[in-house]
Length: 270
Ligand code: IPD
Ligand code: CA
Image (cartoon, rainbow, N blue to C red):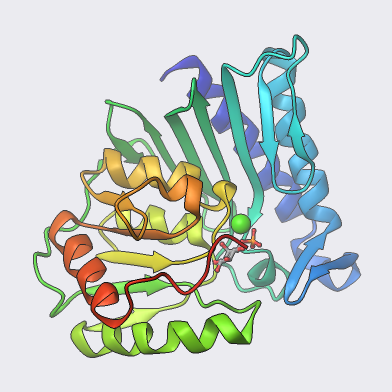
């Protein structure tokens, strides 16, 4: 395993310990509201600190981009290696003891995604990828599904739950996808949705208005598992926050289905 990925896994497991320590008494965890339907708990903050500490103990010069604490330049102000961290992706699930949440850590070097880890401490499933070296679930190679049609495909999505206006624009897209596929899931963690696409459990995924830490690691997982991740116009989803992913043919048909409904994505980045 690449040394950077090794530290990312160690950091993810540390965050997982923090999450599971509070699991049995979540009613006593303090929760703050960042915005409408957008929460942060003391566990998000403690888990994020554990991740950053694990990284900086070994790589004090590396930069951090983390959901709760923002951007931290490395000790030498160096930005060549950037760690993109979501300490709990699926915070709403976590608060509700709905066991679909994870820590997501992506590593970019000179702007290029190089490594990614997604870890669900409840299921203890660990997804890893390094560019050019494939994607693994618990050390075993994973591939996207071999579905070549929307008919029979299982797709995940994320709802625009923060703004009703965005939801109105999104609904016709959702309807179009439901009508053409086997079914659609809204499981509440974009990072795990992408990991599930990489593992072939889902055939595709689409969501708009995401943040870079939601999708950095998952994007690499899907690509290394042989899938496609793009934004609405074929650009970089990490820049726009709009993400359409899947097994190659499914991704292309999913994108076409969405574009047939609307030439524009329903949300720009949140
Ligand atoms: C959220 C999850 C969710 C997605 C939201 C994200 P958070 O991340 O990934 O599935 O629909 O857009 O914000 O807030 O739990 O880290
Ligand atoms: Ca997130």
